[in-house]
Length: 497
Image (cartoon, rainbow, N blue to C red):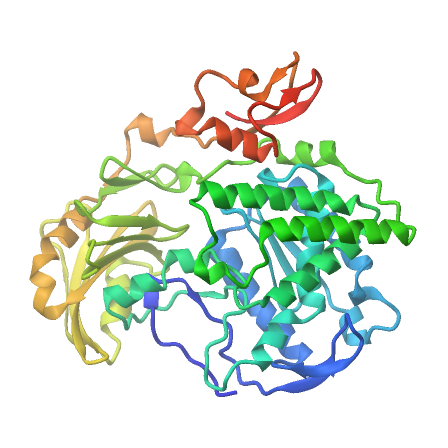
């Protein structure tokens, strides 16, 4: 396969990019079937790809900082691996010796995924929506199944030479930007949250089958996994109905529920009793997890972007649409003719942060100066760059706050740039230290596991007012209950405080 070097997207987009190493189809063993078949990558290449993408995934989402939770997830994951095809006597040594890694990502998105070579992830959003440890085991077993069956490499073998293969969300931000705003936004933040979309339905069904098997062999009540897919169905319906077209390769959640229940019973008939549920253990570790986006890492309110943790804020362009990523803020006009990105820089100074862009050889008519109207030591610059026949003009601005350099990057077609320059400048020059306690001291909503002290419905047990406009239905979904469900005294449930 031709080496893929993607020079597009730049700092504006988080790209799903993993096929940028030279490779050719190989015939190797499938650890699950034990038979040889064609793969797009050798096992050694899968290990290399997984290791490289693991760092990018961790940098983009952030790893949730909770040592006890990390140890808990790792313990369950390694137990499941020990019951998987990756540790069986008739499996080749190269697979048996592969180390598996398990990480909790600091994301509110309900998601779990795996990368080639044994890297497995579950988000805090996913954990909050689980009811017990058996469900977690089923989901982790599913991801281990993707790795063991080498699904990503199977899909790679079906790609035509020269195509970019999307196999798990390797997330790459580049210094060089090369796309007009419209194209940039079409491959932006929404895509970054959709992992492993290149898997076929048959791959997903096989991973479900393996997830049930590994959980059952480990002693978990694997049919509990079906309940989680009911939750997924409710989340889908709450989001507006059917799955997006890009998710059409995934089996219907309702079908998966029935299939998991059937397969769990088959393993019970084979003599695996599957008694372990582990509800209290899971609840103990979910207690205190951050719900939703953590406002201390940045929030958009009243036309401004606030960062309480780093104690700064700045105004956003009026009337523009905005997106907040972990390390970036993206604003764009409704017609997507102008885009502005704000992000931290690794440069030592504001001047260096701008030079890293304008000193590139494909930049034209570049300029750089200290902003005479800045009271925070800001530097500004401009440059022209031609992309696919279109002449683009860049607005560059950088400031330093509390030993950290931050950079603004605006882009529009050169002929239209003057229409947006004042919006770029207002936002950049508006960077200020945050002192307002309303935002400086804001705290995230957290899960609080509480014990019901009286017989009531879930709705009756809820407080009159929930924090941050959270709806009662959201409490019901994270408890895998309905608002009218009766709760017995002594039952532990998840609340949001």
